[in-house]
Image (cartoon, rainbow, N blue to C red):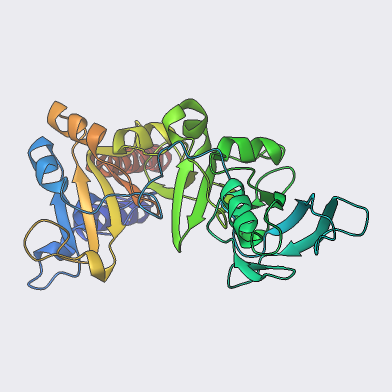
Length: 372
């Protein structure tokens, strides 16, 4: 045999028997999970099937930042006066020589004044009167009673301009962000969005976030528009932000696409995620080796089986069986998960056979050349 032929078979033997790695685009399942055979592995492996889904139901699930959304509740139509509101008081007094009205006049308007931090406004000859927490009609009656000692027949009218305590700030994601006063306690978030010019065009899968009392709630805008029960009533000092959904997962390996994938709806299952990245690569993928890699914070670790035992967890799926497919259809993908489709061992074997075929072709050509 010519030296060149012997050299080619040595190279081939190295690939077949010495474990030389052939170029490929993804790891084998056995390579990724090899550490689980160690005495102290650094990650947990969970085989996902329909039986396992019952136990996984108690594991932490992806959710909203503030734990959901506040449902719609109808509120009173009237305002509640708060500190920093602006109040204008008009007084009618028919008494001769009234202490309140100018000479020859029966009416006087006290210039607009702010409700103090203690909730009071100042009235001449009376002093500070508490109006915070009252509706405008209740405040009118309170002021009229306070004036009885100096003007028994006086009648009072008040108007209230909402201040910061009775306003809602819409921060981003609309055509006209700013501070919007609430005309009453029955103003809803859809009304506010309409006043602010609607959600800015071009936002991808927008989320509406509400900050109230130090907590954050969120809902997908599409769902808010469809479900009347989510049109929550606003409160003074609420903060509203409309932002793009920044949740994503990563697809790697022998899938149809290797890329960062944005969430297109509120929840995505493993099977839907595979569809979003173009499924499995027919010539390379191992359908028995679809992996989801996830990290849990230390606060969510459990030792009783009702949650992850380790921070890093690998969930494995076998998409060649109905059991695995049904499980993948129910398993929810978390933000920042990585979906890894491992390489099929058959693909490596095919590559080696292709190499062998090439070697034999070269050998035959070399033999022909030598014979001539």
